[in-house]
Image: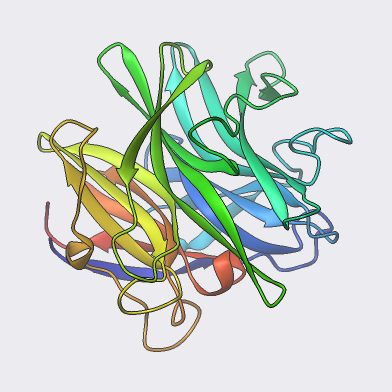
Length: 309
């Protein structure tokens, strides 16, 4: 694997907006044509509730923000709904003549800090915005996922949709500190809306102290499926790093974290951790959006892969 060249820090909220007060976490891309892209991300309002915003940049001049969203993409759910305390974007895919926006809905817990589930919003061409498909989640905890599900990636393979998602399997409490344990499982669908969890593990724990694997991103490149993700509690650091895996069939994965080709910087906004990668192709080059320190509080940056895969 070749190394990624960091192109710079792209965006952090200024804190001036009530609904976009801090954080720019879990970035992902919508193509706009030409060299412009819209980058969606999850921000936090003054009450620490998550909302989805976006910026537009030119890939050739990535550190110059051309436009910033003035309103959140989706609203919070009603009291008692799965997304009453936050909506966090995961991924945007094209389905037939419209767009599906998958998102994490979360609410504050009682015995544990929070609970997540996965929701769906569909683009409405008449109103030029996204409408939630339903008031409830499209994927929630199940016999395979006892605590919660979150941060999904959806691809199409033949006539089927495949979802890779974070599956929380337990909470651990030590001296009033909660530690979640989650890895990556798979679900299948015929339409991208109604999902069947399979219990199939895509990326499992590998290191002795590893406890969190999140935000999978899958691409088919040169006949091989490639996945990037975040992992925490590995063999080198307790803070997030970006991992990498390969598969011949999109189902059976081999971790190759030592080949990922990107690490924390010596100093600055991404010196403590790098996490939540999103990989996209533009003019035969692969680019990676990623978060730095403090889970997106310092915003996100962009890197380009030197050479090819």
